[in-house]
Image (cartoon, rainbow, N blue to C red; front, side):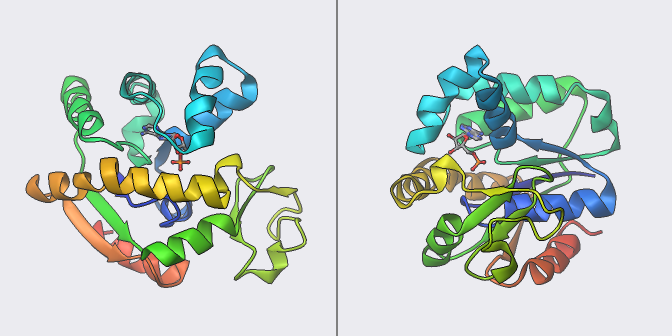
Length: 214
Ligand code: AMP
């Protein structure tokens, strides 16, 4: 099963991807995670990407398209994959279509997770991620995470550099301008399923599972 998760920053794509991986063992392709890893390792691509990411701007299309094309050629893709945070522009979506065709792959479903803007701002600024297990928590709704220690594995929780109020506002504007048109793009392609992402993560997950016919 090859699934794309669409949705604004903070809609819960990462959380739902983790649940899908646990249930179906799919490979996770998150361009945000790949870029953050490159930033941490200080690779030339990471250094170049950081200036865009810190402002909440999109990294140039050719960079992320190249990353995804390479990732889609790894063997673990054969068992199915989740695209999370890619594509983010119509140009990326068109290139993805070309790459999938070239590699003999196809998407089974595109799931758009829809959350109102006020909740997105609250979620993003309260988001903390575990340095050890990558778990995602919300300090406003999960008091166990407010201590800065991961409730799952005991690792240290950190706030992403781009989850500050100023950067979040720009990221949401960039989403509305550049990424939201993909909802129509995939609706026209007959692949789109929408789920209400305002509910609890477990409730959203049951909608996602139903949407992909799992
Ligand atoms: P994310 O973790 O998906 O919210 O991505 C964090 C940041 O990485 C974004 O704000 C962008 O700067 C960059 N990024 C991630 N995915 C893409 C993409 N598909 N196209 C362009 N930039 C991206």
